[in-house]
Length: 111
Length: 116
Image (cartoon, helix red, strand yellow):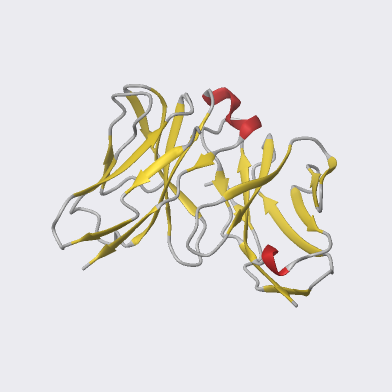
């Protein structure tokens, strides 16, 4: 079983702050990494993908990947109350056929 | 607009009853997936299909069955053999299986199944 680990939280940050969400994975040969946002009672929606070591920025979101450390993170700048949700890390392995998801980190942005 | 449609949104199952969850996509995606989500848990893979008339068991296939007779459709049947079926069920699709790594998934809106 390939593991994807996330801190369940809740992670609480004040509005306007940077939220940092972390994820580790066990399959060293994993190829691609995704962050999904899931509001309560809703289905996940893709917010970021990353395949190469380093940073990838998209608006207020930055994904960071370190394959040597088997670590991927998501930074949310200028956090807003509407960012309050569960963030799921998902990993696609080298011989994989489907995404393997972590349990998610609950983020709460307080006004 | 293209997307994935899951129905019904809410479903109630009596003990010993089989129920079928519908999943239809008009994205022309080859691969389709079923996941189960329990409160506070991540998504666990039930079944997946990379091509019409072919499907494979995921990590928790016991008590479930699927079919893939059409590219657009991937229904999931929750059988009476599934002893704890209450959960949120999510259907997803992706482009050609070899490209799932680059595009990720598109999800349906989910079906919430409750045993009564």
